[in-house]
Length: 472
Image 1 (tube, rainbow, N blue to C red):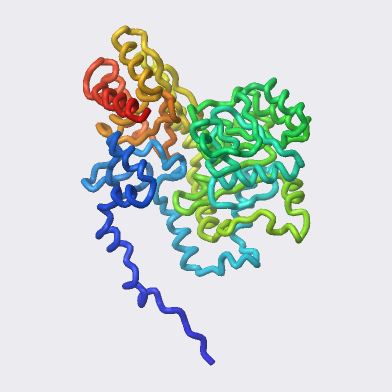
Image 2: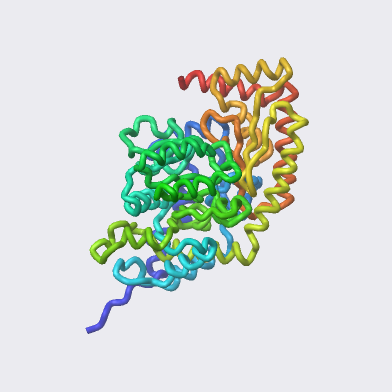
C-alpha cells in the first residue's frame, strides 16, 4: 500500500494568487473597511486627511503609489521596532515555513519555544519561566490570572491613565474611562496614582491585593514612574505578600534605551513581566509573560492542571522563529544602545525648541519613547485661539500638529491619547541621525506656522472644531 503524497506547491499555485487579488481589489481598501470592518476608522482617516494608500514599507519608511517616501515615527504602535521587513526576520520566517515542522501537535515539546524562552530570560536573570500567548493583552491577562492564583487574593491595583489592553481582564486595569465605559461589570480592581506610595500602602493594608501592574513609562502621555517609585512599591508589595507586574508590552525590548524599562532603576525585580509588540518582528503576533519559578509551579501544580492556562496558537513555530530572529538582530546590531543614543539626540534637539515656541510646554521620555506636550501660550492672539480649541475639545491642537506633519512633510505620528495635548514618538529603533534631522526640521516648520497666527494650520483647526462640536 502506498501513501499519497501531498500535491506540490507548483501544482497548487493557480488556486490562489495573492498578488493578483491585491492588484484586482486593492483599490477598494477603504470601501471594504467601511462595509465589513470598523466603519468609523475610514471615516476618521478621511476627516483628518490620513486616508493615504501606502504600497511598500522598508525599515523606518514606507512609500505611496506615487513613490513618495514617508518617515514612520509610530512603528505600528511599537510593533515595528526593527522597522518593516528586516531581512534577518524575513529569512527566519522563510526558513521555518520551508522546514515544514510538526507544529502545534499539542502533545509534544518543540525546541523553538524553549530556545526563545531561554533567550528572553537571559535579559532578566531573576525570572525563570515564560508563557507564550499571542498579544500584549494576552500577556497581561496571563499575569493577572497567575498573580491572583499564586497569592490567593482577588484584587489588582493599577495606575491612573494606564493602558494594559482591551480584553476584559486587561480592561479592568485600564486607567482611561473612555475605554471602560459601557463594558461593565469588570473585575474588582482599583486605581492608584502613579508614584503615590501612600495610596499604594493604604490599599495594601486591606489585605486583598494580589499585585500592582505598572508601565515603567506610561504610553498615555509618556509619563515615567518617579525615581525610586518602582523599588519602593516592590518592597511595599512584598511586605504585604503581593506581586509587582511590569507591563513592558510597549516599553520592552530596547524602546527606552535599556532592554526593559524597569531596568532604569536599580534593584527593581518584578515578579511578572509582560512583553509583546517588538518580539513579533512586525510579522507574527506573539506575547510573553515572564515570571518567577514559584508562581508558575503554583499555577501548574499537578499534571491535572497542565492545561489550566493555555493558548491555541501560543508557542507556534512562526512566532517563535520571529522572536528568536528579533533577539538575534538586537544583539548583533546593538539595537538597544542605538535606541538610547538616537533617543537622546532627538530629545535634546526637541528640548532646545521649548524656549523658542510658547505653545511647546514640555519634551519628556526615555530612549525612543518621547512625548511632546503643548500648552497655553502667553501672547493674546495665540491664547484666544488656544482657548477656542480647548472649548471645542481638548487635544485638537496636538491633532493640528500631527496632520501637517503627515500632509506637508510625510511624517506619521500620533496624538498620545484622547483629550491630550501630547504627541508621542515611538519610531522604529533603527531610525538614525538623518531621520532625526528630518523630523526636527519638519516639526520646526509646523511650529513656525502655528506661531505665525495664520495659514493652513489654523484653517484646519476650524475644521476640527466643527467636527468636534458635531460629535457631541
